[in-house]
Image 1 (tube, rainbow, N blue to C red):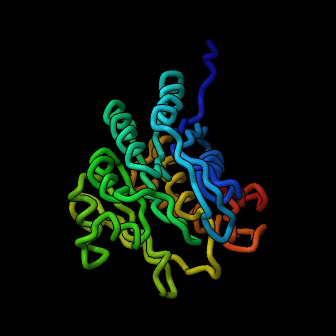
Image 2 (cartoon, one colour):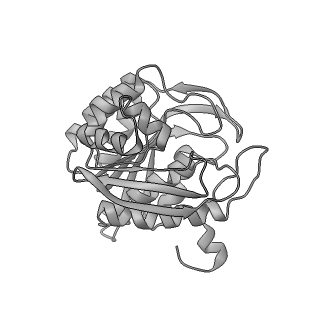
Length: 268
């Protein structure tokens, strides 16, 4: 047995994106960039480009869970990052997994639709996530439309944040990337209240995988022992700089440069 020190391990559960811009590829790049070791578990295979999602095929839930057990039985996982789950039966299987490993922090990026268009979840997925997963999660990072899908009765962003906390999640970071404002305003909720409000200069263009990047960065930092609130602050800075250095290899959305610091010769 190798007794060498290990990097903080993040179990990333989500879909595969062939462009490498979102999904597990984005998770892996962000976790590696922030000093962690990602272990990718595939829930679905997508057919998408930088413009939109054309199709997806979910894996059998038993195969998803077998992948997670292969990692959890062998490695000391420091955090779990959930992305695209796709179907209710996979959400139910992940619920059981999280319940059985309740001491591991969980960051949920509730992937329901692709930023460029196209569904990435089946009917009833939002309700299943709210009921089964939120009570078991440390942090959820929805954009504003996703937050309202998960809290359909909320008539404001603050009401949605409170509803997510009431559903059982410890912290909720609602991002303002979809608003038509000069600044992106993100809001962190916890302890039955709005904890902090962050403003970031809005960058021109649209980005493929920004939400994946943010949630994976949070998970990587939590796996290293940072508090969720501290992880959220640092992960936002990392994500903004990744977007600032984004490139456009396709004809649609730009892809964040999650290794910007390596090219800049600076720190992340």
